[in-house]
Image 1 (cartoon, rainbow, N blue to C red):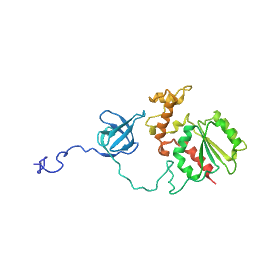
Image 2 (image 1 turned 120 degrees about the vertical axis):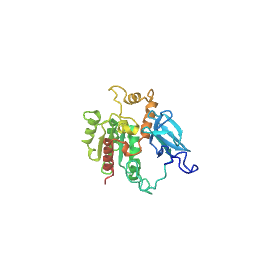
Image 3 (image 1 turned 180 degrees about the horizontal axis):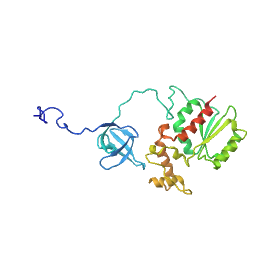
Image 4 (image 1 turned 90 degrees about the horizontal axis):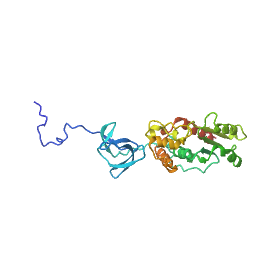
Length: 277
C-alpha cells in the first residue's frame, strides 16, 4: 500500500509536498500584473530594493514588495528579479542597430520639421538616436502656416533638404492646400511634406501600449485632448492636466512597435529623403 506521507518523516520538502506550485515570473518593466489583495492592476514601472512600482491606466502609482501576491490573467504568480541577459547587438527605439562608439555628427543643413510640440517629442524619442548619428536635426514647427515664412528666410536647395511632418494631413484640409501649394512652388524639389491622418499625435500611439482598448470618440467642437482625458477618467480641468496626460502616453512608447504604421512609414520616408545622397 502506498504511503502518501513517505517512509522518512524527516525528509526535506514534506511541508510543501502536494501543494500547487506558483510560477516565478521575471518582473520586467511594462509587465501588467494585478495585486491579489485589493485588485489594483498596473504595469511595472520600476524595481528597487526588493519592491516593484505599479502604474495603473489613470497614472496612479503604488509600491509593493517583490514576491508572491500577484496575479496574471487571474492566476497567482511570484515576481522575481529578472536575470541579466547576455547582450547581443543592441537596437535603438526605431529598430536600427546601435552604432557603437559613434558620436553624433556635426549637424548637417538638412532638417526634419515637425508640426506640433508633442509630435516633435515623439519623433525625437523614437528616431532621435538614429538622426543624431546622421547629423539631422528635428525642429519644432509651430504650425504649417508658418512654413512659407521659414522657407523665405532659409530656403531649401540641393545642399539643404527639408522633410516636413504635418498634423492631420487629410484631403480637403487647410494643411493639404498649404502643402500642395508649397510642393508646386520653387522649393518643391528640395522639400517633402507628409502627414498622418489622425486628429492628434496621441492617436499615433497604439492604444494597447497605453493600456486602453481604443482612443475615445470625441464630438466635433469639443476640445479633443480634454475630451479624451474626460472619457478615460484622467484629470482634464487644466492645461497642465493634458500635459501630464501626454507625458504618461509618451512614457509608454519604448520602441517603434508602440507606434501606428501610418506614422512610422511617413517618418521613415522623411529620413530617407534628407539622408540619401
